[in-house]
Image 1: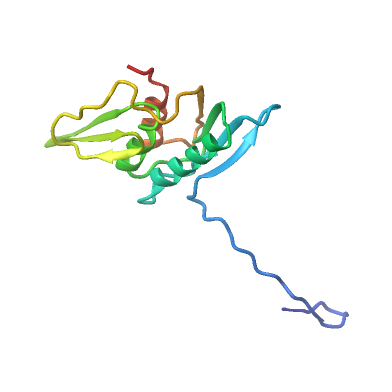
Image 2 (image 1 turned 30 degrees about the horizontal axis):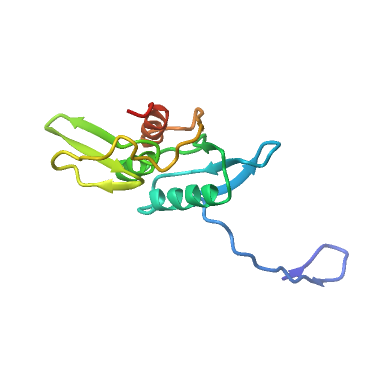
Length: 158
């Protein structure tokens, strides 16, 4: 790049490139004095693999010895109900019925995966990937299926 300023000689600048993190990728960081609280920032459920990305970060946190989990949804404006139900099912099996004027559709998630809505889903009572304490951060920008995720994340195990 050439920098030109009035009254000064031209200067050549070399600007290095860097790989930028996509906005919709879940990220894992650590907080707390003991370093055992995992913070997963989950900015959206728009991508078709957002539940897989969340599950991968959750398993990474577990492998590193996380004892507590914080999921940050403060800037998550939603996305795919299938994806957020699948992600929320890491805490407990999820069955979410969406109703509209001419019918309804049921979204089901078990152990971080989307499951077909047809028929009864039989899962063991302890079907959950995360068993420790969890806090879900929400704010004015949390909307749509991110609210569905936060609802199911706080439901006690059956």
